[in-house]
Image (cartoon, rainbow, N blue to C red; front, side, top):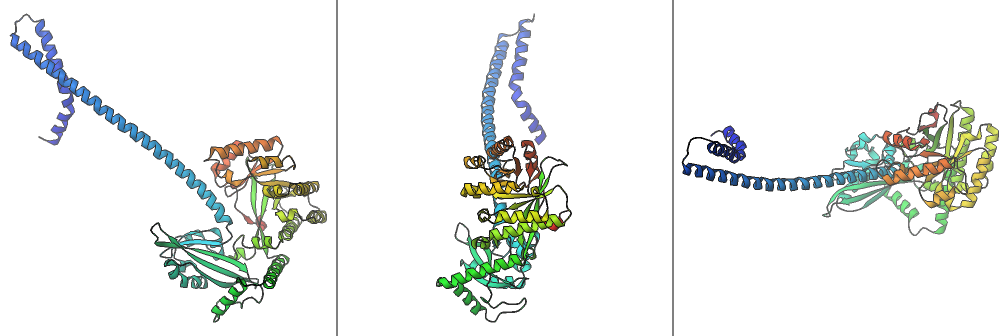
Length: 501
């Protein structure tokens, strides 16, 4: 018997008892109306066959119903499992997206250079500061061996510690990097092992942290020269930074660092970048804003990572001086260059600047000398800084606005404290916290918070800005909510201020 014939018989087999029962029933009906006499044992045989066929049919029905119930239960279980898998997948995607957004914030703002390599020394993660330090693109680093993309001296400084870190030891070494302005940066390289659940080393982290070297602290090496007294230099560094350092040494070190920063400001060793803030809905008459971002000149030569110098400036209470320099350069830029009449600049002010009583007079004098429209300047102030000293900050803001300048309240969150601030100050803009903006497509609560902030601000005739707008989908969602302005990579990436037309 062929497979085809066997398959065909299996197909018609369930219908045989019913078919037989129908045929026998038809015969019995025909015999009952027939004029011919039929033997009684034949009729009895037909009835037995009919009952048997019906009994077999009933058994088949019960068996089919049972099989159907089992299959239905299996389908229900599969449906539930599929629903759970979809729910878990959506949760995983949401968590992954949230973590990616958070990691992006860390990646963009972490002041040190961070990378991760496997046991084969191939790089599988690096932050922005790391690639900027070495002047490389992501594709030149990702999944490439260290020796391929690190320059000679940098690889030499960590190569000797790789074997030790792969054996489970945390390794630290230091070296001096010459900067283009002939100053120097002391770089500390930390190699940290990464273990799996079984305690086996499966990779290692590289963390570079730079700091300025005061004059005379270390003998500086010129590019390409080999140091014959590297161990002695290392000892001197440890002595300067050691636990036994006395108060006089610490005071002198702090003084030298402060002088170095002041010198950098006076020499204008900083560059101004800017990021566009555009209306969410296209409006040819709307003002265009640019947030000013400050970088050290060496940063763009990939020698000092973004953010590495700011903690040092804050430590020595020199942010007010740096902010003053930025305002001066922006006003000078506005007065000397012919740019769009719709372009205005947003300048971040630090908490220490808000406490500087001379800063207002500095701005006023610059505006009067340059004869530019004060509303071309919008000063961005962190919500946290306002909360920290509400009375004095509110007074500062009032004086700024009396000059004709604008105020943007940044990192505005959906909490009672943030909303209460608006009882005491009148901001021109609210910049909604980016951690909410980047989640509005995945988190209904963050979406609702953003909508509430926007409604509240508009009721007070305050314009809103959504920051960290990384995708076109988020930008479209902000348009639907009614947010006024947007800032982020989906709008425009930062560029040197000289590139503004």
